[in-house]
Amino acid sequence: MESPRPLTTPSLLGIALGLAVLAAVTLSFLRRGVEELSIEEARDLLHARFEVGEVPGGLELSGGHRFAGGQIELDFAGGVDLAAGGKRQDPSEEPPASDGMAVSSRETGSGHPEHVDWEQLPEGEPGRPPAQATLVLVPGRKRAHAFLQQQFSKLRYKDIGRVSSRGEVLPMESGKLDWQGFLATWVRLRHYEFDSEGIPTFHDTLRVNLTTGDEARVLYLRWERGLPGGVSAAQAWLDALEPRS
Image (tube, rainbow, N blue to C red; front, side):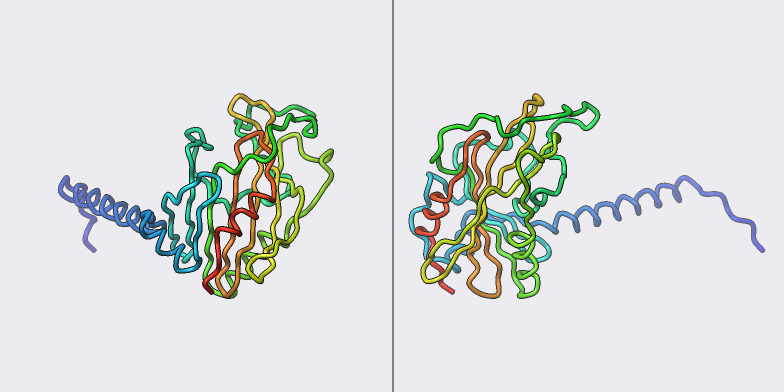
């Protein structure tokens, strides 16, 4: 049996080059998992599904994303930077409502207060329009059904006095709105959290089910921190969107 030959410099360089190529291919594959959509592409997708009137609240269609599984997100934005330099988050992947998950923006090692009286947080002026909106489209009957169940039927309500001192997402109210011959289910959630300085605060979101067929269509509205959300904003969007199918 031959003795194993030592690796030469050219051999090592070849292995390094091969690993670099493999890493580049893997990175390219991962990047293809999310495709950024131009405003024109997002507009075509939107108008294929809805007759669109004037977008309420001064928001404008700003583009979108298509994911490897087929899910599409169409984004509407105004002049407010909600993330304040933070990472963009898929609205449908927010922590499940009232599941005890921490939503503090602080490092876990910095500790949390033993008790936060979330009910005493000051609220800003009611009736303000949302600062951001996202329309999420999920194709396929089974996937759409599971998505809608997760977003609207698997929400757990609890008394605000039992909200974790680390913060939680709590459903506040829900109902149905008449919409072009359909009933659009909606739910408003309050995200109890901490700002970058560790001060307790909240932001409100509101989900509206605009599904009329096998594709799930859910509108997410988000308000600035400290401003209460309201169903009147959802009604304004329903007035602006008429389903084509």
